[in-house]
Length: 110
Length: 115
Image (cartoon, rainbow over all chains, first blue to last red; front, top):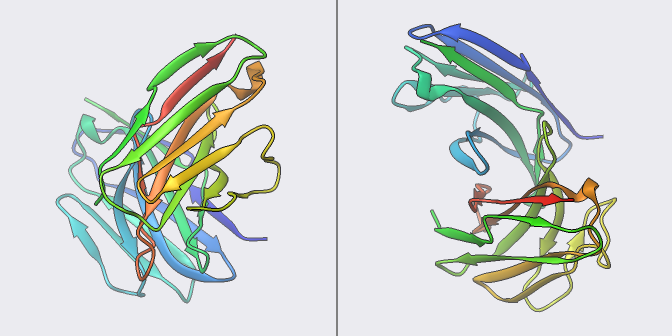
């Protein structure tokens, strides 16, 4: 059965810290791995990763995929209170459906 | 990315009634999906809304309970029928342009509370 596992499930850090969120997967017809940020109701798209070893960056956020070891990490540097959210990892299969992880709840303390 | 709107944004409904949620996109999209997110849980796919044909439901979801319409490439509705408190959730529609992109973009969501 296809699955996506995120760790840790929750994380509390202080403003300015750097955090690394993990996502491992076992998906038969893997096509891409996606990261989303969910603050209230709707997840907002962060990154889509398809190729191994190519880092994607957006400001203080970056992500990379390892297709050999079947995992991805999401890094956030110089964290701010506005980064507090649930971060969701999902894997797209060949049917364009997303298999979701349980999410990492990140709390940034001032 | 597409701009997606959903109505209503929230509602409180009585047990046994039905609610229809609308999802409107500002451009034509290949695929539309409906998700449910129960409190403290991750997203669960209810169905893929197919334009001009019946929706494709995931295991555990049936058309009688969650009828879906998709009359064109920019609009879809999800009805939650004969509601019970267990249906209290956030309901989300998402869109994907398909072809070579697997990115999905989400509407703002509908928070449903059933009393």
